[in-house]
Length: 229
Image 1 (cartoon, rainbow, N blue to C red):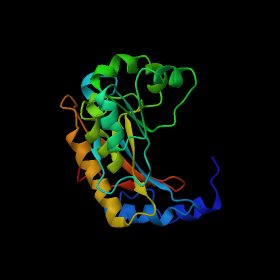
Image 2 (cartoon, rainbow, N blue to C red):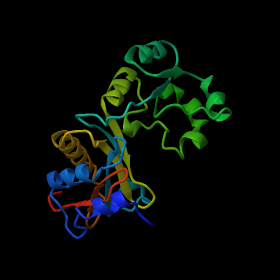
Image 3 (spheres, rainbow, N blue to C red):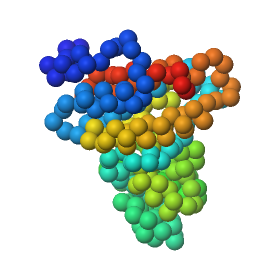
Image 4 (tube, rainbow, N blue to C red):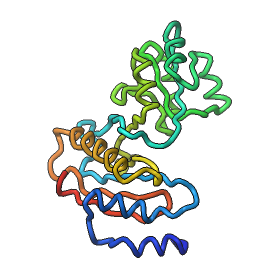
């Protein structure tokens, strides 16, 4: 893969063999984010888990103290009074069974997170084939299947993000934008790492966190020292 001039210049600032302390890594990632738009800062955590085993899965959610810098569109699937509650909480879209054909047949996906009340999971289940592959399926572990829709919507709007293992046992999570101050990025990074460390599966033998890399949308990866975790 051929990289552009900016990427090559930015790469010179990073020593690929060094695992930096978090604060230093964040500073470098900010320096190497040179695109014309406000790049997203992401963390990629390679774990020693084997996601094929249910007892080694990692999945959950954490509210980043400074949010992600992204406006998140929330869809709430509920019925009765819960629809009004969701609207009052600031959900972008609310609805019930009538949304199924809209999502299934019309391909409507103008939302980033789906929250559902437990009594609507039968309806939501019919959308599994559409929402599942896109990582949009509500899940009790992530707090998106709940009767407390107000709290769910407020948390998501405040900067709550989900984390889960992908097929290669890596967790990919955004922790802010390149325009954030280093302090804000570090606070978000620390909140995420605390949640990931707590989520360590008890069934796991051997090393839990193999590598942590910070990167901006268009910039090079910067390795973070895993020793402290």
